[in-house]
Amino acid sequence: MAVSYDADLYRDARPTYPSDWYSMLAARTPCHSLAWDVGTGNGQAAIGIAEHYAQVIATDVSKTQIERAIPHPKVRYIHTPLSLEEEELVSLIGGEGSVDLVTVATAVHWFDLPSFYSVVNRILRRPGGLLAVWGYNGSISIDPTFDSLLERFKITTRPFWNPNVHYVADGYRTLPFPFEGVGLGSEGEPVSLEMHTESSFDGFVGMLRSWSAVKAAKEQGVDLLSEDVVKDFESAWGASDLIRRVTYEVFMLVGTPKSQSEFFPRARIRSSTGQGLLAAVGFHKQPALLTGSNRSSPAQFRASILVLEIQIFLQALHAAEHLILPSRRDLDLRVSVSGLQETLDSSYTNWG
Ligand SMILES: C[S@@+](CC[C@H](N)C(=O)[O-])C[C@H]1O[C@@H](n2cnc3c(N)ncnc32)[C@H](O)[C@@H]1O
Image 1 (cartoon, rainbow, N blue to C red):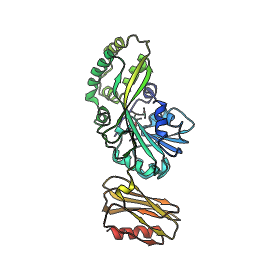
Image 2: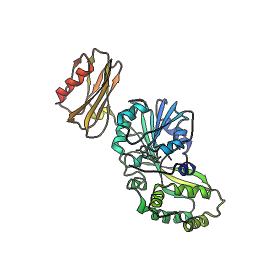
Image 3: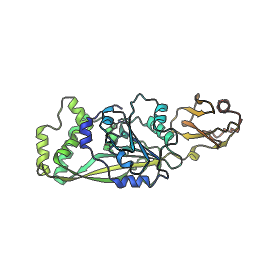
Image 4: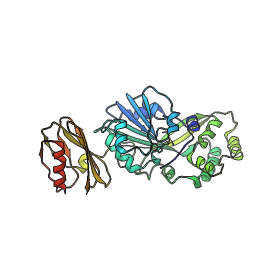
């Protein structure tokens, strides 16, 4: 989904997040090697996450957002255009099973969710890897007079909402989130949090200007923040030089990939090559994508004849030889293999 922000305005206007959120998330991941902050903007969340993880990869589809990102020694910012293939993205971030925490701060509603969740299922460490998404802007409060003016202003933005903004308006209650809850929200039931900032009047108006709908309106020749509107806001604020406390209602969902045993029977495979396979799980009805490697070369096979209940990914393992198979109860695969290629070929034969 194409969305664009004015990166200079965005960096100046948007808040960073409370540090205790990152402690709360970090306490729930057993390892702290790598985090991926997606739709990072200027790193509003990435710089906080970096306090808990050895490295943070922070990506965004917008080159200008990345160019204006807040530098941090542990954060590596990468521009990831929408044209990037899933395989490229997975290896750019760190490879399958490499990421301890994926965060998406007020951005997941813009994503192609099946593709994004597919990547998340591949790159998260198992067990223990977490995906945390959160959003705000649904509800902002300062005082009753200002709040009712703001509510009226929000109504004027509606004709310019991208359809995906409805997820935000719904407080992510309608956002598909096919992950196992860890006590911080689950699909349909996000947890509610509050975030407070101290803001100048100009800072607050800048924040409103940075809304995607306000930008979209401007591109269509409509200035939602005309002088008169800003004047009304200013008198409700009190005085333009006052610093006021702004409270944002935030909605958050945190989950881990669904347990493999829920979907997959296991079969043990003996492999004389010493290469093993591990299936990681996707969730969509798609042809299976099988990837792995043998000693000499990486291999990838697309089992296009199969429409499985879910998408499967295979990762190379070094010693243990487990192959986790799709939930076809009639499937009984016990193969002794001399190489990965043969494993996959014989799997196809059995499945077909
Ligand atoms: C509202 S901003 C959030 C930025 C930052 N995470 C924050 O908390 O302020 C949404 C960001 O998502 C980015 N974005 C939109 N679609 C994306 C996609 N498919 N993949 C990665 N980033 C995307 C936009 O360029 C934008 O910087």
